[in-house]
Length: 372
Image (tube, rainbow, N blue to C red; front, side, top):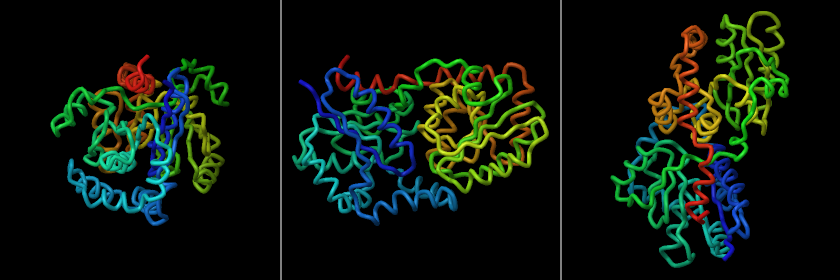
C-alpha cells in the first residue's frame, strides 16, 4: 500500500528545515511512497509564537549567546518540560487542525515541537500514527524526549546510550546520522570543482560560513585569516545578510595584495560544491552544517560555538579528531598556520571527518521506516 508521508520541521535556525528537505528527497524515490509533504510548523502557529521561536532565537545567537546557553542548560530536563509543552499546544491551533485533516500514514519530525504536539494528538486518538523523530544535533537535549514517539533516529551511539538511560527502548532508537541532501553523496573532484566555482584550483581553500541567516562575527574572522603566510583563498558565505556581503566585498576590494584572497558569496544553494572545493570549514558547529561537512570529509575549525548544543557538537568533533577549535579570534590565523605547518595533521583530520560522516543517513531512515 502506498504511503502518504508528512515531514515536519520548525524554522528556528535553518538546520531543522534542511534536514526535512533532505529527507523529502529520499522519501520521494521510495517505491512505497505515494506522496511527500514538508511543513514548517511555525507557519501554522500564532504570530507571537513564531516571533519567539525565530526572531528571538536569532537575536540571542547574535547578541546574548550566553543567555541562550543558560536557557539550554535550564531546560535540559528529560520528561520535565510540561510548561513549555502546554505553550506549544496552545499556540498551534491551525497546525493541529491541518494535521488532523491530512491524516498521513507516516509522520517524521526534525524538530521536537511538532513531535510533542503530534504525540499529544495521538494520545487523544485524534491522529492514527505516532510520529518518528530525527534528532538534528549530535547530542540529545531533554526537549527531544517526548511521549508517544514511534522511533528515534540519532547521530551517535553515545546519544542512543544516553536516551536508553531515560527509558527509551533500544530497539526504538536507530543510529543513522543526521540526514543531508542526497547531493552530498555524489563524488566531486576538488580541483575541477574549484575551477567551476571560479577559484584557483591549486590554492589552499578555506570555507567560512555564517549560516543561512548570516549570523556570527564574520568580518573579524576574515581579518584574522589575512594574517596567514600560506597562499590561500577564503570563500566567505554571508548567507541571507546583504549588509554582511557588502562589508565583505569592501574588505576584499581593499585586499588586493598579499597571500590571501577573499571571495565573498551571498546566499547560495551550492554549499555542497563549496564544501567539495574546500580544505577546511570555519563555522559554528550546527547539527546540519556539521553533518554536511563530515559527509564531504571536510575537517572543521570550530569558531565561537553557541553555548549549549553547538558546544556539545564541537566536543564530539574534537573527540573524533575531525576538528580543531579556536576560542579566541585573534589567534585564528596562528592556529590555522600551525595546522598547515604540522606535517600530516590536516590529512589525519580529513580521514577522521570522512569516517565520522554519514552521507546515507536519509536513505537509512527511509529504509528503516518503509523497508528496502
